[in-house]
Image (tube, rainbow, N blue to C red; front, top):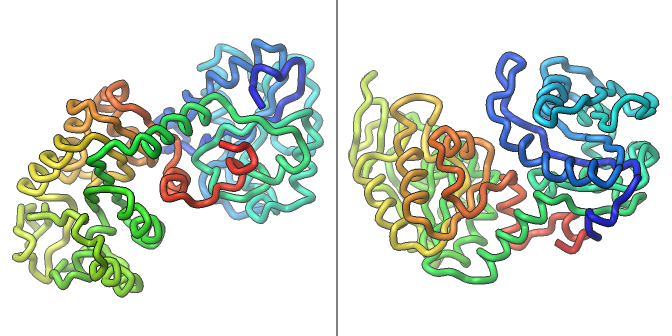
Length: 376
């Protein structure tokens, strides 16, 4: 069902405002900005809007001021140039006497949100006439505000999620080859199943972070004191022993701390006291070559410890290379997007997705409950 068909209704809208915060201030507002088009469309059609979202991982049933959505409500109000009424509890009356937009407090403060409680879902549904879902980043989660509400209200897809899905489908359906998939991050456990499935779909796969370290260890390389996941070594070995393992591009060298100094070290020369933090100079040049011969690229996660210079070099060089190459490119994952925006490259990518885990799940053909219901 199309957003244009909603007129003069009370509309419950699920956005993903789980944005990076520091000392109560928003570090990157990408996900908030992506909500504006849907909000403006609903307001044009004389609707009243009730916004719901989560922030962080609070303990259910416990209020945590550091994870309150109040700062985001104030920020969005400035962005829209429109007052927003902040509602601390979904049990409070929302009158819309003075404002056209209300925002509820962090939904994960409520007991039953993550378990998709029927009672809580019904309570949310009672607040509105219909439900709009525009939070691709949490579409892989079956929770009260990501799925449960849709069992009790007519449900529509927001404009941002429509754009993201249509762009991602182009990547999948056009089969633009060679295709390179770049997956990085601290934990391989969250992405191991996806890595196995995506190897079937790509021509080259580049790994980074703790994921790369786990595969290097499984391969028999010394990784020193670097971050890796011991429990997943056998699974990584199984992937390395498969026919698809030749698609994985392993680095030639790595940027490490060694004897309290930052050094560029060949992969086979890593010592037991070294710590890997990024790809090395030769490896960066190598992956730039792969990018430049690719027709399509999917990228999820920074390559190195980007919070600390110079271990952001691999990620920055990769971001610039993809942008300059102007191939079909999709980037997802909250840690990667701020880097691209800081470099002012956001308009040189086909799609900057608000999804991370959900984008990986969608690409590998997994089920995303609310999208299945919306036929997206």
